[in-house]
Image (cartoon, rainbow, N blue to C red):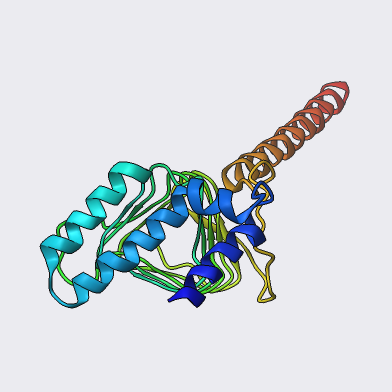
Length: 223
């Protein structure tokens, strides 16, 4: 248990340059408190003490602003950065070395039974305000851009942005876990630029055809 606690603290220092001391991290990091509370709640949940588990979960939510259902399965070295507004559903499964930012929802899409929340595989990163909904899988080493809404499977080593989320990078190589939120690809903008370029090409062709037609008419008149 103490080894896991130390590991949780060390991942904060690894991921957050603002962390200055163990004392500060232990007392002031709500993401860390939410993870520790979830471990306790999950232990009760597995023993079918559902009411106690849910009560611990709701108390943790009250103090941290982070709602993790006690049924969710969370791996090692899970890091929550500025966790306010995070929601993690009951059947959600999170692997190791996953990073989640504030406002993220790992939720369901309706009242379906069984596995209805996402599976987040190892080394994934989910940026601010992203929503991953339904029983889908976000592959290893993948990144979900800020504000994205993901409704379909995400392959490993991919970057997803937009509403709905679209895969914009998938090269099969290891991707760094840092994500520059201010410099994300924009597939919608790229498509608009492509359409605008095609329109300009068509305009140029029409102008050329008009000139050719006018020239032919002029030559025919002179004849």
